[in-house]
Length: 442
Image (cartoon, rainbow, N blue to C red; front, side, top):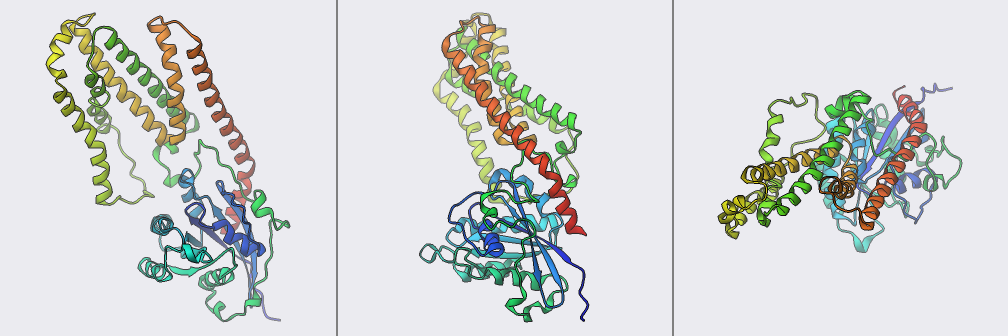
């Protein structure tokens, strides 16, 4: 009897934009089925499949990732220890094709040359809607030095050929190309329900990630993610305070400016950005991380466009302020200010500084948590400002302010509760995912 080698395990990660058909390819391969009902993957799905070859058996661990932008920060942790990265694009979507270079860059940044990369053009059944020709796909694959194949998960075209192509490229599998199609036997190790892949999360994986995500490879996290748990929450709380206090103070000082006789609309607008140089002060004292980066440098055109977009308001506002003629009345405005010239200057300076403090909080929350969380806190602050006006200016608390406050609290509470549910679900299944990842390394 011929000797049978030990079960070899290989981790395959499927990457690509949202709705390009990653889940459909896996479902067709696992169950030879196609579900016309689209359900976006949330976080990650994990399945296993055993392939019986001539003289060996291999287990393919299929990691189906989400293509949504909010899950991009999790991708490095999924690429880790992978043997194969399958980059999928939709032949009927040129944008998804153009984005494949970014996905490939991300894989190579994380794994270097220790991974097999396969570029897959899916949905070839959409002949009338095709935007990317097979020649373009092949040329792009040659340029990026990756494998290429076109498939149709709906029609079942080239699905098994894709995985045979992958298997042939795996270490020690060079002779696979001569094996027969019948050598491949479908075995689902995780579920006996052929509809499970579309209708519910798979065993051994998790579909939900908390929005306050702090997991991932430690070596590749931003410095704030390397803090202790309480230190991270302290940083989050500090940025929340900066946002709420900065915006409330800026709005209240702006109102004080007009109440005391100020009448320049351009001045009130200018102070929102004019104090940006004070943000450069911490830059000279805070050291940046020396660790490896998972991102690549943007192109010159991208950087130029960004600085142009940000620079236009900085140039436009002073010019508009001068063109409006408001600067000619500044001295008279100072003299007529209700609480004096010194208070006038301090009000404008305080407003400018407060807006920069708010900006630090907004950007800080985006960096430490997420843009969604930062937006939720920003919206919540809109309801707090009228409450602060009641305290500072002794405004009357009317029904509109109460309703606005309740709506803000309701939105904030639902966000926190949903994050709590996601966090609980992720914790329950995280051990299973870790075990699967460890199993890959065995």
